[in-house]
Length: 267
Length: 153
Image (tube, rainbow over all chains, first blue to last red; front, side, top):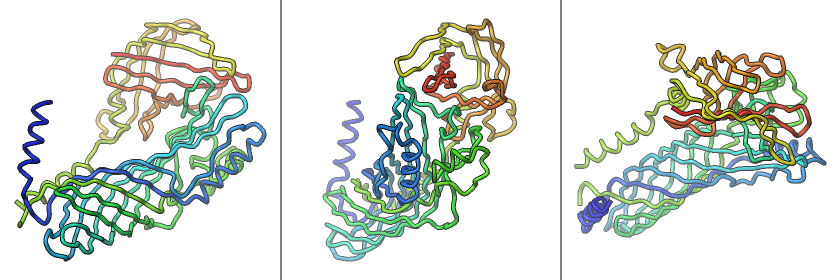
């Protein structure tokens, strides 16, 4: 461990004094992922209505920014250290964001709905760098997002089951591809960058792609329901249009990253 | 030097996309013979949990891959012998690991006399330890049976 620490210090010392304009960056930071809430809140209201009177702790309404998490990645950044000229960044990041919503019934049972969004993001941004200190870029990102919704029954002893004892239980997934325009601003101190990015993900396909769970056996539809009352009434799974569209898991995307540059190229 | 950096970046991006499916990794983890360290049936009620039956070193389960030639299958066959409250139970069946590697689904089990699949929620899985459970109705509203299996190699 001591050797690793000394090696890291020596590596950083070697980089000190280099004044290249561009280099490889490794990045990591916070990400908040937005969703379109209308359909999700229709599920919430229908669920709470169905169990009205026996649900002392109902599901909460979803907000526009509900999922929080991290992103890590890397890429190439160019920012001229002396002149005010164009700046560029291209790279890749993996992000994971999460949110949880739960309800408790009068008999002590509960339901928990946990969303996880895993993104593969291609960064492409270009704009203006001001004397190597700050930059403001326009972003043209691509986001491949896999959303999973873990729907679990929570028993009185705390056991969380995604088994088939209730049809709503399961892990429902859906994938969307999106173009994500936005804006990125940041500043540089030595070989560190602090960047903030605000984007809006726009899915390529408009056709509904429901969150589904085909792995488990169930009487009802394999799609996660839009309206819980309709789901319960549909005992043979014949209603194929009562699903949550995976495209709902797109919207505002906010990132706050710390980047470290390993400079290379022309000084 | 510049080209070298671009090659490294390209390599890192490529590696991040190149990964084995987690359902298949989980299926492979199941393969082999496991000692059933714990077989337990509980009754979960609002007033508390009652242990109905508990047996340590209850037997064994052997999982095999029925289609070893197929690269992407996640199917499992199993045989075994477990001491349950009804006596020694000989096991034989088939199933699969779900897409999210979170459930072991047993095909054509019996649910209250009707053929159905049973999904066991996986709570722990390492190369040497495997823990799963499944829940079923207990007949009284708000009460459920929980069957837990702890296995080790």
